[in-house]
Length: 123
Length: 158
Image (tube, rainbow over all chains, first blue to last red; front, side):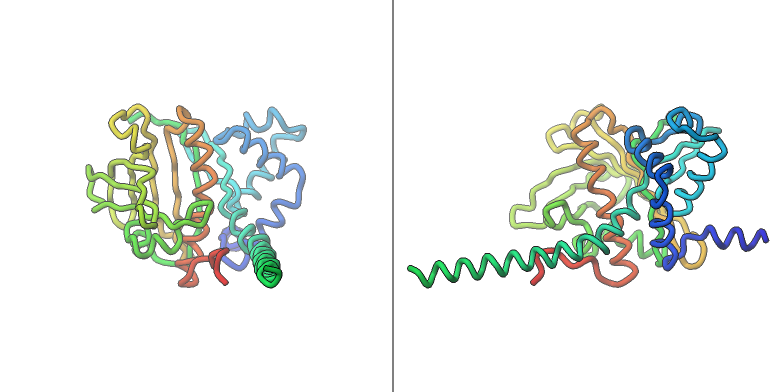
């Protein structure tokens, strides 16, 4: 069982994106990310102050965000600080948004070319 | 050095070796493939990467404009690279410098964990806003380059 639970926490590449989407699919976890965006590097206690859920629930949500690599941990002495890690969000942006945007930019470029060549014909 | 709370911590897991990550951080030919600014202009960091040496963050264009300068604080290939980060106009005033650390650690399953920590930015909100948008893009491009052999296509590509 121990080995299994360790394995499930490995951020292997094929699972990365699934974990990120799953982690983002919960309003409580998104609120935690917003909290960290407002103030980066908070302790569990500080994060609990703004959340209307139990400390244990916040701990579990943070663990899921950590597994998805959306939250990075820095230990400062005995304090565990939570940092918003937007790198996986950027990967999703590149994969799912940038791709479509590039298509739109290409379409705009073609439109511009066409309009400009129409102008040429008139003159 | 006192234990200070970092301003930003960025982590990415890359299927590669620590040596390859290190090379990508110090070799300008590789850097220009993945280090781009928001307008898509390539940037490179130029230095001999020896402790105490100066480094420059340059635009890859005809002018080669230098936007950021600093000093190499620690250079321990392929594990840790630390340098200071300042505007060229504030190069002489160390109180205005921030600090960037790259930590490269072997993880499991052939993955390498790359952690970028940026400290001492709180005195400069404008710089803080600028770099916080820049690092995620640089790191996700670096991951793509090392894993697939090429960075994301540029938006200007036909």
